[in-house]
Picture (tube, rainbow, N blue to C red):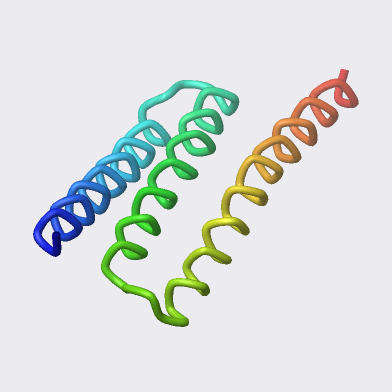
Length: 98
């Protein structure tokens, strides 16, 4: 059973790292602010979530697991909220400049 958990953990960590690398590439390659923000917002949440899940699988039933769960919940709540706020502020500033 330990090998299965270790395998799942490695898969989650690798997929999370890959999603974060794809987000970084998207930030540099996409042409406009909104497409860059979409790449960063979506894959950042996915990448950090998968990395945290991989770390949770490695931590066992400890206080570390509770801390990682709280970090995951905080990330899942704040990351989309920040993306929405940034997009709203950019749209508002663009409309005010006209």
